[in-house]
Length: 354
Image 1 (tube, rainbow, N blue to C red):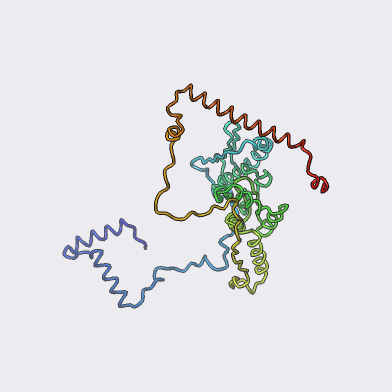
Image 2: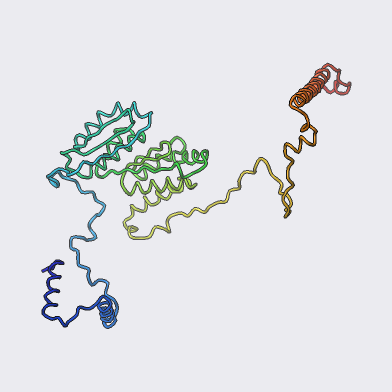
């Protein structure tokens, strides 16, 4: 029979009462005895405390989602759980239209929901009738997907046990905004062809919206989608990963290759060093000198050099006015000369050429 900690303490106390001269070994003594016993026995036995698990065998699918039944939890939850998320202003009109559908669907799972148009938030919470403790997390994923512009009919599928979601944040992965837009466009491809191929290969629903990529599907498919998206934002074109997924899909159909390594079948793409664009302005490197550059003259130094420093405010204004008039006269003379040249007759050689 198994002994609890209280039983062990009582036995130790009785042993000390009956044999007061005997001392229990210290931790160091017990450890040295154990190490001596292991050395005498030979190699350390790692399977000493392992027990057979007849309920766990190779035929069990650990990823299989068991169907939840109401009789698994006859009582109600002890505490109320709630989740809230904000949504952008442009989603307000659509959410108002589909909110009755969302409310009816969540009511079938005994989940209460609330749409706050003043704060711009959606809230879901459990009720006294909720008999599935995990459905509140599914409802949380539902309002997240609705906030990320996924249609309501598609977002409601996340309430199924076999469907999961993943929201990939790509906003901070690329610093340059133009480069970020170009790489995000690669996920879509021409006329959405790349995105459609990714959805067919991973059996997931993918939506690129703003600074996030929302995906819905199985756990294995979501991992593949995340890898493709993150590699794309790290300057790896999604066509390469799509080609690898296509090869893996064909290899999975062959049962003879189920337990083999597929690395020899997958292509390896070498990185190419592409020459950068030449800069518009090429700055010539100056010869290195250990001495610092000469100090530039200050505004006061320039006024002292021109004599303006010793003039009063009125004299300075007169001097600036005179400089403006001189410059205006020179400009007018130059424009007059340009207009006069238009009326001059060209030379005979030039007229013949025309």
